Length: 128
Image (cartoon, rainbow, N blue to C red):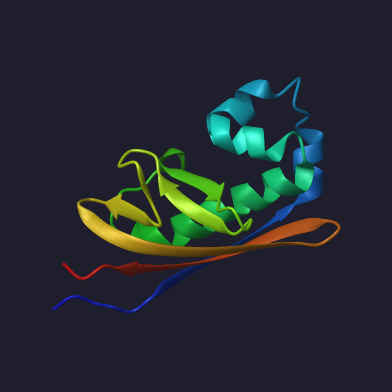
């Protein structure tokens, strides 16, 4: 029997953390933590970087109970309406992650305040 319950993850990031890691002196951090498409979307916006990082962390927290997962596998993109969606960088699929051969449906929401970005994620094993 497949467990169809949703796992949840949440993360909050302080914008000051990303201000301290300026884009020029910490380019290596941004290249490792964010894909080229994520960096293009953020265009050096502290709140966007914080939001995407929070989303990756939230998805990681929700999905890692299914097996080994790395943040580099998780890419946060946006649809034409601006809604965030999860892209599995290894499997090249949108809206799903594959963790140890298990296909997971993913949902994520990101919000920002003046000083923080917060993300909430829901992950569920797909019926096979």
